[in-house]
Length: 322
Image: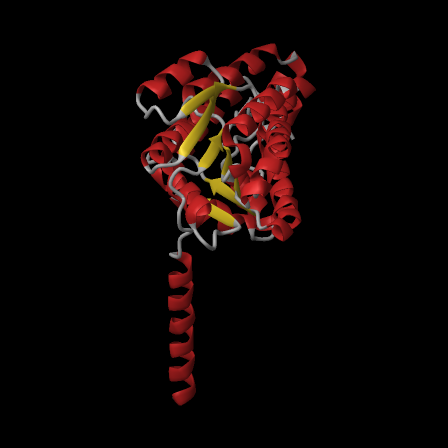
């Protein structure tokens, strides 16, 4: 009995120590510089507003002038916006040089790589290489390019890099370029974290589940998929069946309603912890769907993953013909 009491007390003590350690914050962060990509809408937009209010000196990159103007209108004079397409290498270099001139010897405390697109999500045999190229260019190559160009400034400040990945970087649940791009982000993040440890730079990865943002707009996702469906060769349409598109859309809508997280703030809270905690996490799994379904499923054997994921697939006409 004594053994079990001591064991219980030991577990409680470790848990309490971990909780106390997790709450320890870096001091004197007010006025520190952070750079956030993808601030037109969604996570990046909310993060720019919140971190601006918390006293950070925010550089918010936007893809469009409209996004930049709207963000600037609701934030302090301290926040600065800049137009950036992460696919444009020259633009990335120019923005990095501008940031260097702003931060000077202080360096850049935080880089939040948030910019991303979904791209078409459809069966692989519906797609060509261009459908894969854009998500990989934005979500992976663009993220790497921004990081490489900002890295000297991060090292100078012994700061933080926060990469926004996805549960799609742990588990392949759809066809298209999005999932491969996020698997790539996970690999880059982990190697970068180990490379930067000697320099005092901490690298974190956020893995959100399905959140209600412009990226996951069901109408836009369906529209892109329908365009591809209409251009498919007759033999592929025959294999899938004329009713496949409508049935698949209905299943995806049902799954979206079950999994969708409407409150974006938990993702921003993870970004904040990664930027301000003395001991940030290597990975942050965010969203109820991610924590209780996608992340546990990603750790299970492939046979279980396939069984559960294929249950949400529409049966093909070619399968019925056998």
